[in-house]
Image (cartoon, rainbow, N blue to C red; front, side, top):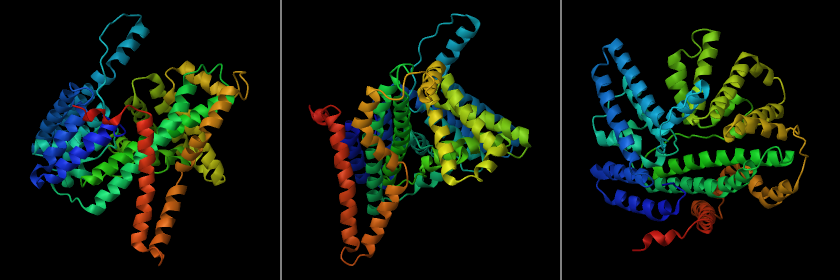
Length: 474
């Protein structure tokens, strides 16, 4: 089930909210856990067993670590076994077919295994579980209540697409949190903004990107290639950040506080800054649970670069079982190493707009590898982007997508900067200080603003989907 689906909007969420706020405090976590399991099981019920196995396994690991924490050597071995067990579970479902296919191709073998389906969100709930046990190792108290631990890992706002929520940032909220009208109102506003990002901007850009990337890059014009990759760059940003906004908003409705996950990454002036702004929870996870334990930058220059290589290769592998994902991760790792070695010092000496052009250009090229299924497609696509395929600068397809979807892409470009947020903040401040409007008038104005976004989004959902009321038929 997805946040942007009609069944979630019109059936699941209203029922869960009703049950949650009508239930006594001791039963609220149980209600949320039951709702989260239903949410996850909606598409593939059997994969709930995989997640429950992961929860049970790490529940036991954490209790052992908590009990043996004074025995340093033994605990480190337990942590090692825990990490290996979690990665094995992830690897079996996510990478088995990829590994076997590469062995067959490399050694000319014909090993045959059945195609293993990928459980939704397995990368996210595996990382949640690993961070939980490691946080216990770092003096966080082990969770004795299995329902509370299961809720932390399976909580539906962050289950499918993140953000990756650290246990130490939410442990106290599992026991004690407060739901207020103000927090619920903020959560609703945040959810609506995320829904608008996903349904209007991300889906609008996705239509362009999907149709362009479905073509042979050797036959498309240079302009069409750029239109396609710009649309995809905006699609993936509004897809991820939209879901993060919806997750943060949903969590706020139920009294939870999630940390921010995106901070306008396309205004960055270096690749290092881009990754401090893009998918913040993932970047900080790899920093705290991989890079720093490997030694970080504390063991000399060459060891630092080696650690960065491992982190960025792991980042690519985490995103998907494909060599193009691995290349994408190492591509960013290479630029971060270059910036650390000398490029960063050179960048600060040039005008800011050149720094910005550099960062955006590198990121956009990187998305070609991320979107392409093969290296040959990515290579040919990049050639077309730079006019090296001899396909011409402009064609009728470029004219069509430019005229028909140029406004959506332009709105997405504007929305990827802080401009609209700064504008709305200024309007709010002016409305609050205006004698003629006052706080009450400001609230009406802002409510109307978000209501318009919600109405537009729902119209988009209904017009591009099936009848949302079908689920109410008996």
